[in-house]
Length: 524
Image 1 (tube, rainbow, N blue to C red):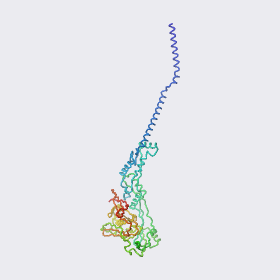
Image 2 (cartoon, rainbow, N blue to C red; image 1 turned 180 degrees about the vertical axis):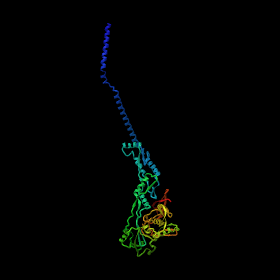
Image 3 (cartoon, rainbow, N blue to C red; image 1 turned 90 degrees about the vertical axis):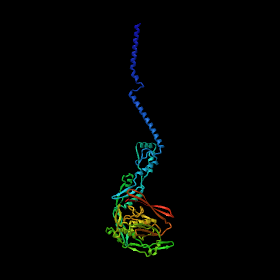
Image 4 (cartoon, rainbow, N blue to C red; image 1 turned 45 degrees about the vertical axis):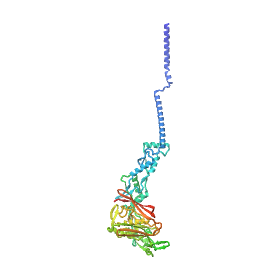
């Protein structure tokens, strides 16, 4: 009985072992159906999931940043960060604050004047006179528009880019180019080798035509650009080399000169109702034919040409109708001179004698150089001190600019129209700044126009240390009281700046104020 039971157990064990082997043989088949992955594939899937999560996070951050930037841009009323104007940081400033700070910045960095140099010749131009400034308003507006002028995405891009970068705006330089050109034209006539134009004057019964001479003039456009660049770039020494160009004098036009000087004689007369005076005028014409005059000019190159004139006298002169022709004193002005300087006094007398008694008809323009003529030894002029390139030297005709200055002031006080006037290089001893007028025969003239309804007469005297001009004519109902106000506007190490105004009054009340000139003088 026991033996049988053991047999039965052995069989059972054997059977269990067989079942176990059968299960083991099927394990690989079962493993392929398991939900668990191999290690490598599991890591790949996990990395991909993390990457997707990072992308989502970054995307969310960008959206948040976008919303923040958009919201900031919507509520921000200042210039965004990273914006500069001509190198000056205007980040986070309002437009008004940016303008205020820029104006102060430019005021400190812009020089008072620009020095102009040509060889040994030097002069200056005041920046205030030519209105030099930077357009800070437009620049601040442009700075403010950065980050605001595109769509939402473009604006946010600009905000981000300026945060980590830098945007610089170049402001516009503003200059009164008309005033600058006028200043340069005046300076051009002062160059030591400036072009001398042909001119003419009447000496007795002869017409003297003087030849011009080739010279240099300021290249206005080129020099203007050089000045602009010096101002814009805050030049260290503020010095600009004047750009010049060679210029030939205008050819002598005999026919044009004949047309200008030819005049029929006019008899003096007056009317009683209304009372009007019409002074006499001498006529003048060539005493040779026009072709003969042209042949004189073209025959041989000379410094001067003489063409004989014939004076055509009127039958009734102004003197024949007495002082009634010019009953009223319109203006009176005097300057002082040193009697001890005999050569200079002689020059003053010669120039004044040329002008004395000159009658200027309504609408006619008086030319100092044409009336006085060339200042030469043969004409009786002496050597006296003059200014040449900033130095005092002896020159023929020195001192006659005092006559010009005296006449200039008399003409202004008579409320006559000033056509051409140039100031000296230095403030003269006989007149305040901006109250003087200089002349150089052939290049600088003094001219004024009789803008009144009646003729005027110039009466000049030089005696006992006083040069005096009186202008006579006939007063009109619309005449004004005239005052001249001149004063210095500034000084630098090398220059004096000044202005003069003509003030018109009626019954003591100011009616108008007119700028006569803005001038620059060298300092002694």
